[in-house]
Amino acid sequence: MLERLKELSLEQALDIPPLWLLICVLLGWAQARFLPVGPPGGAITDLLGGLLVGGGILLILLAVLEFRKHSTTIVPHLTPDTLITEGIFSRTRNPIYLADVLILTGLLLRWEAWLSLPLAAVLVLVLERRFVRAEEQRALETFGPAFEAYCARTRRWL
Figure 1 (cartoon, one colour):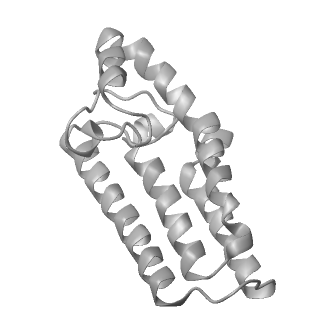
Figure 2: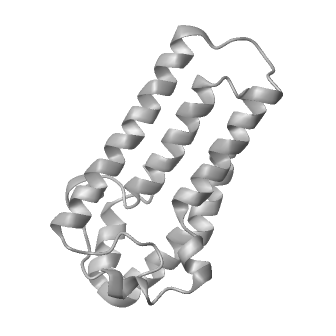
Figure 3: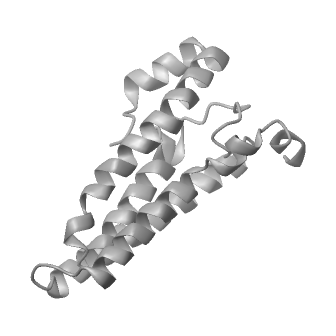
């Protein structure tokens, strides 16, 4: 695995989804901390936020287990060795990216960062444009008809 990481440029090594998630989380936290607006969310909002964060963490764990089981890369800029279509990948083609959005949304709700809720949509756009499209192109080139069949039966997000 470490050998494969050497294939990445410095830009690719730094351009990773967790960094984009962190940027959005920090923006949301700063908005909640320094520019609080709107009514308090209450117990329901806290519960929903907690469920979203917990669900996101669970999705990541399930996806990582599949990556390990199939001995393929989790690094978005590298070409996978195996097309994973089972487990959580039978429900969504991008469980980790979906998890990132769930975690961000959950934290924003917990922090009552109402003005920052559009960051969830921004994160979806960033993930799709910077990672998903390129990953899908590499998968299509690598796995051909098998990837096309997978796309036909499994949604990109939900």
